[in-house]
Image (tube, rainbow, N blue to C red; front, side, top):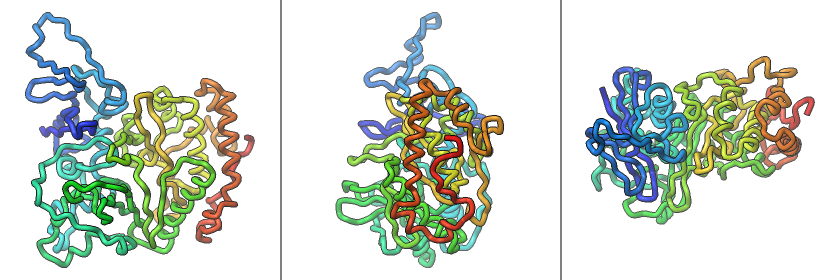
Length: 448
């Protein structure tokens, strides 16, 4: 049995929200597990300011109140915040799946945990590594949750500025240390590796001294002025994969120019810089949760149904009809632009006091071009399609509170997409993208 401690960022900094017991650590996130809000050493502390209850405060026949947290403070949308309850099962694993390093970052962390960086070696991955990666590698993920790990004493790791001129090298900034025995731990092992996915990614922060640092390796007392996610082409790198990444940069610019909600992006040769939308100007951390987590599904790349997703997210939305319009148009954008990598970790939500809201659009690229043949992960059931496209009229009648409002919203958003090919960003796309038969920027689906 292992215990991991879930921490949440608040106005006073990091604070423990819950303890999670993993019964069979060797099975990792596939193990039975349970979550207790603020349960430590036999005590349950209510995560509300100034209120603390201990189990011995209640006599056997006392009425024990159900003390509920606000939705925004729950451990996840599928783990209700009744602090005297115990929660079990897949929703807990789904929450941890959002936090545990995955993809390229996971492979890098396993190399650093298991093999000295100056030695050759390949680690056999598997769920047996999950608990260790949670405890030692989930110190600074995207969003406002983290797993409490071992403390780092001041001075343990020097704060090393990163040479952004090297950012076009997809091995930067780790590979330069390969040749220098003893420097494999020059950074905390998790520094900069808080983003998942198969593309190499690093979280890079700019400090008030003008230098760039790996997230978590900044100088003590510095003020962070910019938070970035830097992304390189998938490995093994090819001209085609560089074109795909370049297209992501241009897609986001084109969509932004048409009024769609996208983050600021920059391009440095073979590297895409995306301004993080989980951090505020003064270091605030905003909740960011994947569609998998919101649905309580553990899958990494697992197939989902759009209908099942809408059944879950719309009742939790701050504006259900607005969410429906935005969800449908984003699916339409993915199909137009050939973004087949539409799994449940490429759709995310901010959790607010009013309910769920979609984050800005991200990870939208022509993955139909990739050598690995990326299959569509989230699909429309056959009986919700018409002529190969989603039957928007049936979806609207099923889910909309105000069908007229949703229909008008979809018409307006689709009309904006008809200008896609006229944008400057589209004109700059590589020919490998614009001539690909499955990239179809037609704007409006048949029948609208």
